Length: 76
Image 1 (cartoon, one colour):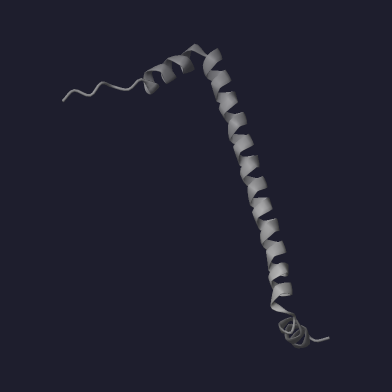
Image 2 (cartoon, rainbow, N blue to C red):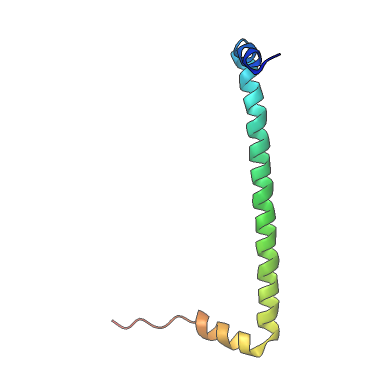
């Protein structure tokens, strides 16, 4: 069967069937997007724990964070 025949045959399928075919793809896309976001969040959490452990164990890093994270007072 030629590609042109296949394209014509697809047009003859009822709307609801075509819609279900599209819906299946979008479910997979959403599912993979959710999985990717979960993986990214897990990676960020692991990196944050690593940074926190380093700051807790290194006095120089702790001093830097204490100085960097302390807001300056605003005088108006």
